[in-house]
Amino acid sequence: MNGLVYFLAAAALWTGFAAQLPGLWREPRDPMKRALCAVIFLAGFCFALGAPPTVGFVNRVVGVPNAAACLTYGAINAFSAASLVLIVHWRGADDPERLRRVSRRWLLAYAVIIAAQTVLFAVGDAPVERLSDFDTYYADTPFIREMIVLYLVAHLVAALTTTVLCSRWTLQISGWTGRALTVLAVGWLCNSAYGVLKMVALSGRWTGQHWDPLSTRLAPMLVAVGAALTSAGYVLPLLGPRIDSLIAFLRLGPLFRLVGSRSTGRVGRNVLLSWRSLGDVELRLTHRTTAIRDGLRDVSVHFDETVRERAYRQALSLGSSAGEAEAIGDAAMVAVAVASGTRGRDGGPRQEGLDSAALEALVGLGGGYAEPAAGGQGLDTGQPSLIRMSRAVRAGVVVGAVRAERAKSR
Image 1 (cartoon, one colour):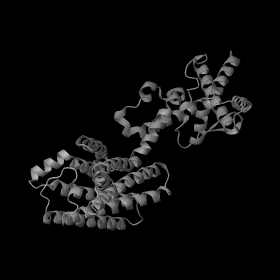
Image 2 (cartoon, rainbow, N blue to C red):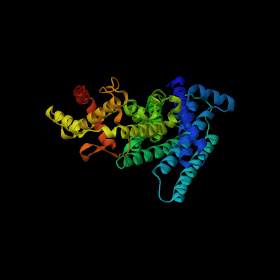
Image 3 (cartoon, rainbow, N blue to C red):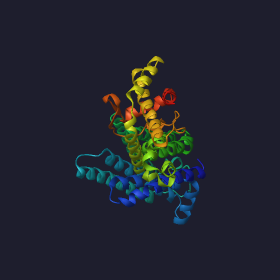
Image 4 (cartoon, rainbow, N blue to C red):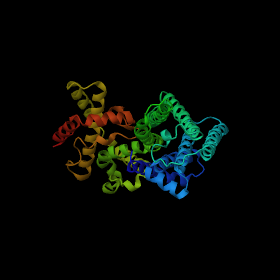
């Protein structure tokens, strides 16, 4: 990998780090947030240090050939330690003191390893500057060889431990955390492969083989992919719920315009979501959901069980399943109720907003409540029912029901 790829990887990781800074600022004592920020920052720092232009610059500034290699190895092991601490806190435990003890042990162990690496580098002899193949070039040099092996073993221990833990937890946890663990497991598997390839290349030097490309070309590419995946995996549980809320918010747009705007009277101002306010998406989703429920409550006096039953039977006759037919019936009843309410207020049938897209955003209304309907049955507005209703709107039966009711009223 050339220097540009290293710097691009570092920039991407530090962008993720910058996105986490507001949360760290709000809760500076949260150990999990601190560990997460440390992991992402150190991952970017390792790439920035490992870039050949940076290696040469650091060596010139320090005045010691290959000083950048010692610094980079220390950063990699600091990244490994931070990752293990984050995994410990992420998994959690009933005893907070036990979490702190385990975290301190990992940190102490890797602090000792970093100190040992520095001592080995100081007593070793590495006079020839190597920008990209330091590992293999000095694979037979006393003390430098031990420093390289120590850093690789420490990195492999962290990578394999994290890979195994994440893979095991993936089978126990679902949702965004489960997806994040899958991404983490793949990312740390790439990091493990990086360490294995480096060790294989060193072994080749020890046995007289020339396997340097494994260390200088393939391993850096694997660790770049691994770093990107692990950073994404750590961030997913934080962004996932916001993504779900954003999707729900957008899907609720058509329904909000149909019934929610009746209670707020501010369609244009509430429909759009500014990317600058993504942090408030949960609050905006709550406001939109409340407006929709208020709108449904307003039109509930016009619910007609006959409309629902007619649409239900028509859907069955067209081959829909019982569940799909029920959703079509509910959606038709709501649409006709909106049309009836508009006629009662304006003296004529409403001409806009009652097409098949009008109820498409029913997805996203969390929880549920029952509104009175003719015949004594309620309208189920729990999220699963609303999802089925949203799908039913696409079938076109709802539009047919609205048109049929309009024709009868003329």
